[in-house]
Length: 157
Image (cartoon, rainbow, N blue to C red; front, side, top):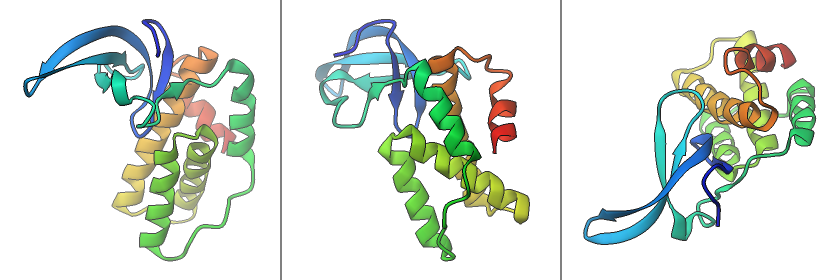
């Protein structure tokens, strides 16, 4: 179980800090929720405590692991399917995994693909989401200024 002040990652949403743990009555059922604040906007996310592990909640990476993420961003582009649907599904699976290295791979590949040709609307949306997930975790893991993080990621790719 996590405690107030812990930095956690919620796959598909990004990383944040637990601000509160509170009981909420939803549809007649009282459950305990983590209230997580995201670093980018003034948004909070409610996460049910009892199934947080099932949905992939995990601690944010350590500052020591940040360099490995930037190595992934600088690495060669991995092979992507030519079939748009298959590529989209593969990228979505990587984002859902909650694995920061796989999220970094999606960000790297989509940024580079966008430099070669215009991304589809779906891929632009996926890139925006993937960058938010990646950048929110890097901000919390290495105490990076949120105003600088996007430039650091873009420059690494």
